[in-house]
Length: 160
Image 1 (tube, one colour):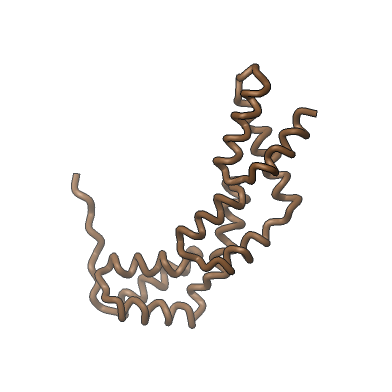
Image 2 (cartoon, helix red, strand yellow):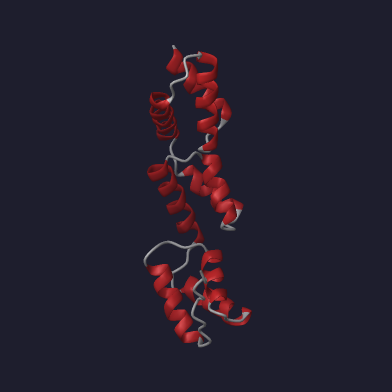
């Protein structure tokens, strides 16, 4: 099977219109938009001009994107802060904005989400050996991006 090649748009105005639409229906990181514009076959100067125009017109806002990403991944997917941070770094969001985004998640909500994730997984694990069971739960929570010390504390509460 051949992969469909993206349409090459050499006209900067047409590319801007597509980028505007791309940003309008969902928050985007600068890097996502930049990658999309390069797919269209635009040159670096054109891409950077479009990006700067999108920023000045409010279509791209890295801080708004970072907060929306953190909120969405936490609330919808039950991700921990480590995994959210990795996702934002992958999208080349600056560290300062990553910290701000992670601060939007309250400590109480974070612990509740971890408890919910562990309880849901515990119901699925058939392991009888308590040590192995806790190990599996800990590994699962760590794969979801939660911190090891926090997981250990919540697991102690579940056992007691």
